[in-house]
Image 1 (cartoon, rainbow, N blue to C red):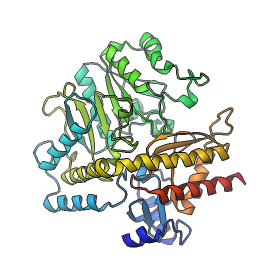
Image 2: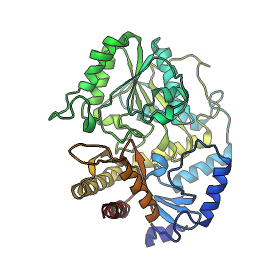
Image 3: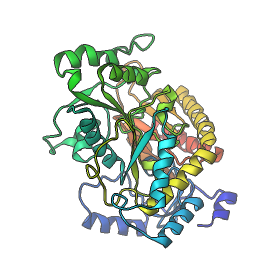
Image 4: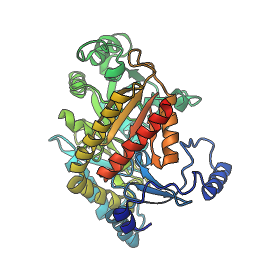
Length: 450
């Protein structure tokens, strides 16, 4: 796949054979025969290569990628600067275990993340293999640091599928079915979901009742605040439906935590590293969390995550926590290259293209009554579909059908929540990409309306 052809010819999306083609079907059959039955496939995409926001399958179809490997391909597919950093690191050594020894890339990434994290407090960093591993470590850190056991998370939250992360997760019952009992002393409360708020959906403005209810209800009836170690919150809920909480919501949680000596943990596994137009989504509220978690887009697809915590919190003793592969030297190199690209080259475009995409989706909302809500920041946008705008009854079949149709037309999308379409393209997209995605989405909606 020639970079010149794609950049000059714009030869994408391009469907040469209805997917899945014969080569793709053979691979699908082989994998389905041998792989775990737990793998849930969205559609039969069989990737051969990628570049920027383009994915080519094994049959030669070219797709415009607006899901980014679930918000992982921050700098696009195979960005030359990231690939070069990986190659150079791999040519030196592949592994030495950062928990037990030293190397420059590990030190450099820890320093870079500590300096990037919002707030004036000095930070320390623990490097992991993934987002869910970062969540697991944060649970241990919060309990050890505070001497408390209870944890608070939110309905609609997704924090991973390992036992600790799954105990905090409450986005789909199917993800938890059959795996209990879970980590004890985890309490779930409503998220700041303005469009469907149980407290103030019909009010002219947010009352922040979903926050005050934690003190007025949970702390009165179920758990003493002095037993709560941490509140885990996504600044924008991802799997729950790309839900942007109302202004002041995160600050209200920060103030609640400060009143009771509770740690505030911001899970920015999906929102972090430029996805929302700022390096971290909590910056929109001027927030300094006690602990901040990142992964997904941190290394443009290489497996690495991080726990970034205030030094006053991350004071566990040597040997208390470790990881054989966390902070792998090749992954550290990819992460450093990714951060450079996002911070110095891509962030302005995230805002500009995000505004263009958001405006286009709003225009579609005016034309199609099935679109109940459009929300998001930067290149993290959700489109919620409903049976009727008055009732706001979820319409899960619509985004499911739309995703399938878009795939056949060469646009890669994903759903989220009960009835939301999520848009999380690589941060390198341009006007052509945005306008092409909007055109295909409208084509699908028009077909579905006929």
